[in-house]
Length: 271
Ligand code: HEC
Image (cartoon, rainbow, N blue to C red; front, side, top):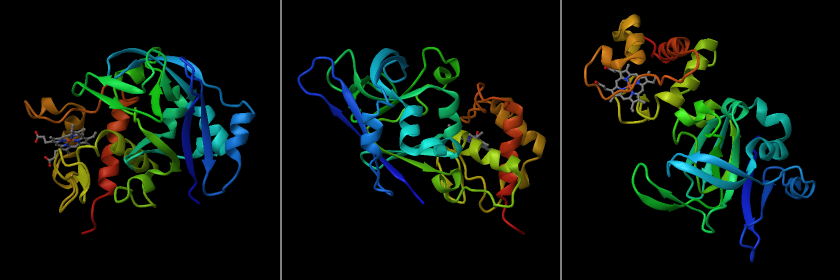
């Protein structure tokens, strides 16, 4: 059963420092969770200062801790889910692994404390002012070096709804066979995070880099140790290549590379 959670922010009018409520509606169940969550006081808005990865400076927002929001909407259930899909007003969907939300602090922000309009004065990737209302997902990039090292990954704005899902649902066409190994399953999650923005398998995924599974899988024509070295450090094989290696901050990086290769192998078409 798919449950959809709507998030709406209501800014109290006529106050210079906006106080805000975040309201949740469980559409599938049509429950009253919304009122309970707010009235029970389980979810509190707080001021949070983060290193803002588009303005490239510290910015203070008002927001609600993401874990508290998800707890109030789903109970413990979301913690065992794989992925949270965050859907923007225009339908654009960003996915965040649940493991990331459990390991790092994030907030659903709905206002800034330094200005009344809820916008970002972006410096990157280009200078422009963008509206981010109603909700912006921000992370503790001040105290958490791993989050800061990942720049703007996982900072979607104009968020309208949140959905619990699985990697297989979030990335149709890229899921490994169900009878596959756990290493391949782990590699699948890593591939969606670090590779699929640029690479496709059978046409599913990004277009920046070459297709890796059609008609032949890259593991069929690359020797395993060279493939590992390529993902580890592409420049050590092809000078000037546009492909970035597996990012340095990835935990257990060599194991992660091996898992991605196991995943690619699992995706190979039959003879
Ligand atoms: C920013 C985009 C980008 C990302 C992210 C990226 N790649 Fe690439 N990749 C490329 C480009 C561009 C090439 C072609 C480079 C060249 O030929 O010099 C390439 C080439 C490759 C090749 C060689 C394909 C062939 O047949 O020659 C493999 C294998 C590969 N990438 C795997 C991966 C894996 C696995 C990941 C994730 C860990 C990844 N790439 C992440 C852009 C990317």
